Amino acid sequence: MPYKVIIMLLGKLYEKYVNAIKYEELKGNIEVVAVGDIAPYAKTLDGWRLCTTEEALMSGFDYMIFSQGVKQAEEAAQTFAKIGISPDRVLPIEIFGSICFDFAQYVRLHQKQMSIIAINCWGGITSHYLHLKFRSPFVNLFLSEEDYLELLGDLQGYLALPLTEDTESEEAKKRPYPLGKLGGLTLYLSHYKSFSEAKALWDKRKARINWDCLFVMMYSIHRQIAERFAAIPYERKVIFTPEDFGVDCQICLKDYNAWIENMETDFWKSVNGAVDGHLQYYDPLKLLNGEKDFYRIEK
Image (cartoon, rainbow, N blue to C red; front, top):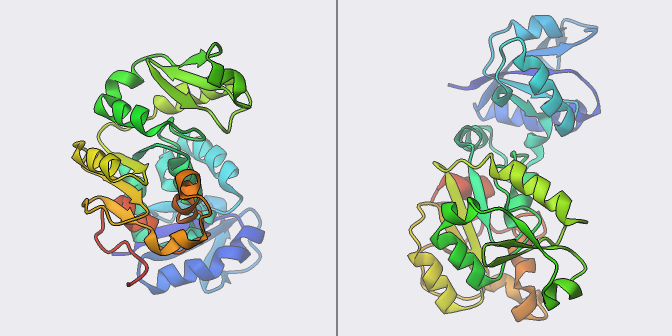
């Protein structure tokens, strides 16, 4: 059965994504039961019932597609919560522009409220491009391979520790961004202007972790690291590698490595490029949902 949706408010974003919405309806994923606007000027629009926002809210729907922007959708979700509409039922219209978007796959992932644990910015980039809430503090930072594997060995234990600032080490003095310490582990807070900013967001996002639904990501150019990662018992995980290391959880990016000048330092560019739209390789919705056919290519 298709999900019943209403589209709330008109404007430029509606025009941008209306064809993508039509395609999801054509696939049978959704049924648009109403388009609500403050001042409806006709009975129908693009074949859908056009009505007031109040009438749209009474239409009987599974999800509201809010077409005034991601931030505005978050604010609207809190407002609609006051009249009994769960914030999880309010989605920004921009989701229809996500890579390999499919509404049924998106809802499946959205309902899981997954937390992505990642060694670098991959988790944050993935969540950003899929318009998913950051339910993990591993955003805009990176760790060394050894520290990350140590972290994964006792994730809950380490995340129970406070994040503190490293101001004394020689490395901290050389870096143009703050460094954090989690016990004996070092976090490179590479996209934060200050430690106070990083810590505030770390604590906020750490509180959102869904321990019942984790997806763990790593990348490495070293076979031994890949084998150690594969041995760590997480149900949902992936490691990106530049060669076929023979581990079940790997995504090998060998075909894309020719443009990397220095594999030792720049392999992360292939890893991040495969999720931000620069390199077309896999379907992120299918990958996160555990589908086996997540590859977009056939070798």
